[in-house]
Amino acid sequence: MSEEGPTFFHTVYGPNHWLLTFSITTRFKLLNSKYTRTGNQPLSQRFNPLTRSILWRERGRVDDRRAHLPPTRGRGRVWIHGMNSVPSATMSGKLDGKKKWAAVRDRLGSSQDSDTQQEANLESADPELCIRLLQVPTVVNYSGLKRRLEGSDQTWMVQFLELSGLDLLLEALDRLSGRGCSRIADALLQLTCVNCVRAVMNSSTGIHFIIDNEGYIRKLSQALDTSNTMVKKQVFELLAALSMFSADGYRLALDALDHYKGVKTQQYRFSVIMNELQATDNVPYTFTLLSVINAIIFGTDDLRQRDKMRKEFIGLQLLDILPKLREQEDEDLMIQCEAFEEAMAEDEEELLRVYGGIDMSDPMEVFTTLFNKVSSSPASLQLLSILQTLLVLGPGRSDIWLALEAITNRAVLLAPGL
Image 1 (tube, rainbow, N blue to C red):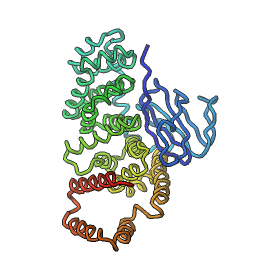
Image 2: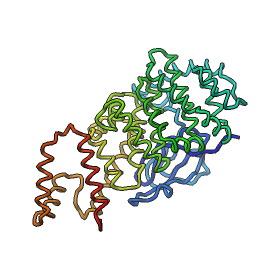
Image 3: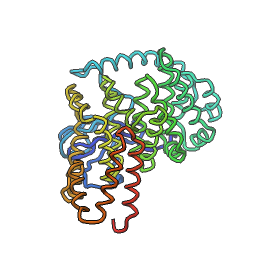
Image 4: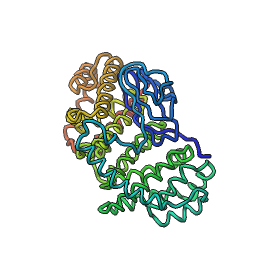
């Protein structure tokens, strides 16, 4: 009996409900919920398990695959699919990016079919044997291990983790990423390895083990340093799923992006996402990247934190990219773009209410309000001194600006009555 575990998914926000765009595997309960934003509604109130099968819903209609389910109220569409799935090759109006993606999938798929026939039979293998096989990284061994992980119970998974099985997988993935994927065999090996990591995270035991041992997600993020788009796609999906799993998962996902920023000496933690978004013409991969952005923003219940996350992406020119993505006229990309924009509009409206009509996205309005607030008090001298000091700093010193932001946030928390 396999272990029931958490469902991982990307979540985007539709006009009147949340749109869940995929789960890691249809073996676990897929989630869908209708959620009208009320500011800081707890995550636990957003999600209601409904079905395990693929589901299309549009404007109150449910297709005949799950016709017994109650219709969805409100506008929009919910599309839930397995994490490995991509848009059908027969879809009308397929774009060049989708054709390229399908070609790569076909290439890898033919090789994978061949290897699957030689898949190691680990159906009854104990954790010790699987650990020994991990010392020999082959597609055959990884494919067999993935199947064994998916069918394992809690006791088996605990033993596998205690024997450093996840450590071996992540170390192998790191080595494979460093090797590159100039050969199709290398690309397939990377992909089957990350599939094993996904299988571990798809169990309740595995995901809680990872959350309790923070270094694992950092190691996983290092697999983004590869030219293998399919591997990067799955890693981003796992990070987004983690950010929606729990508050600790959200914190670890952000920490992993911070870690990757440091490893690659990038200036901003979301640069890796935005750089990929700007560089790719692969529609399914673009869809995943937009889903990651929305998952990071929606992964927190705190209104100010959502606004902060969103502004980080806007500062990296996300608003300039969205119109170009809309030009591709892909339905799924349109859903993601609308999710971002509609949620942003709702949060801005809520922020206006919270701050008494002050547009907190307008620096001049914020400064004018602050100046008027302190101009007739001794605090105006401190404000002037602070501003004079800030003039010395250049915009490129992101480390100092982040430190100043942390200090001011800390000061507000310590101030009585605020």
